[in-house]
Image (cartoon, rainbow, N blue to C red; front, side, top):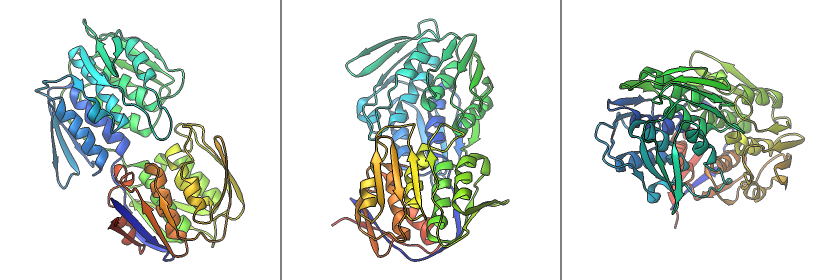
Length: 422
């Protein structure tokens, strides 16, 4: 198993290219199931989760070819010969549930394993299922699988989401493109990944209005065609690397970054004493003083502060001047990185969904263990600002969502290396 060793080495300076969004690409890939014609995705990230989705689609009979060093994915579902998404693949990644809506919409039947538990909370799929039922799907849950049928095809309907759910919005949006009649998604998620999916589906011939708002209207069509679509910039990777010069000092330009993707996050950085400047190349980030100021953070659905940047922000606030309060409102059990930061000399008190962080002048390097994807990179950020050596174990979490982390940080002067655990 790999480890990453980070040694605090002062300010970072340079440029970091930001990859295509993992969460967007994992949604766009199942869209191939809606059409017999090819779908080509450019600006794809090179991650283990993408390989898992590739394996799932191939198990259904789809063809997936990675080109241009994995940055281009050529997908084709002209010869689907299996409509069962098996537990052995689905259990590895919750996004696997996103094959359910497209298969059901195209062929009228699908069998998909329930994804199972998750390290950062239950994240149930009931909202996905209720949305499909609103479009006339007949669902039967047995032996850990969703058996779905729509004998006469899906029909347009009104879906009222009781809470905002990105995944359920995506599944319903894809299914509705081939449903007969008009479907309205109320209280829909507004994330950039939803907008990106709608733009791709529109390129395939779908009729969609309202993406990016809480009400999306889809007029079903008889068939979708092929298309080529660029995956949107990964706003979570963008925010993560924006924090590197904030925590270490220096000046870093995140190539391809856009302010509209991280507006609420950038506002918090400004409040903490970090300048974010939009340029034709991307976003340039520079800390104004020797130390950031404490700020309070509450995670919210987009366009609020992203839950997927909470762990990384906590690493920054561990070195802030003052006391910060972070409130996690999206997922329960998402402060598992806090005990590891404590090992590095941080002062954190966790009470349910709230963490009180008292900043210290300097963190100390220590052996730490990643508990999930975003926690893993928060420990690397903390290590960049720590005195001495930090050894991060279980970095297979990291590889699910960040490509070539060491290479990108080393190019800006970080002292970081990946080693095989002995």
